[in-house]
Image (cartoon, rainbow, N blue to C red; front, side, top):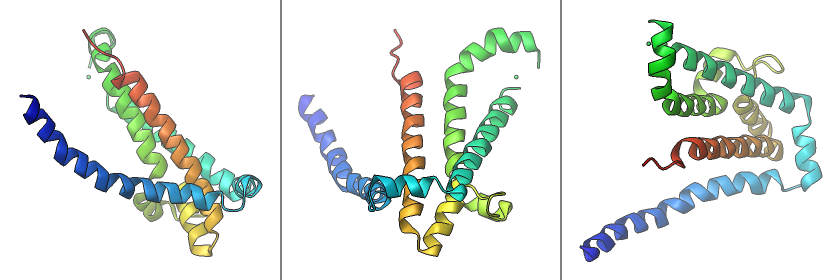
Length: 170
């Protein structure tokens, strides 16, 4: 039985060895390029009016999207039954779903560029700002904002794991 268990880990280990660099290298390059000019350059890139607006606007849109998703996704018909029976059973899933919706909305690019118009200081979300900065040749600025989104995403997924996956049920 133990040999079979060890053998099943071999393909998984090989897969992880191959995929881990494919995930880690692009993420590491964001932070390397974001910090290329030093800490003061990184902060200066984030403190521009455009960057601050794009980050704030992305967070606001993602928050509204996740609240609407959470509200509309849990309409079950009698409020009392919902609140006392269904909601306690859905609490973990609702929390997970809301956090995942928020994280996905925060980084959404395709649908946003098609719908928003990508107007500077009006509808430009952080992913659109990052794209515009790359197009303009401002690689460091684009990576600085991308690094902030990456750290924010890691924090969200830490919360998700901490509050939903970390508890053992007996």
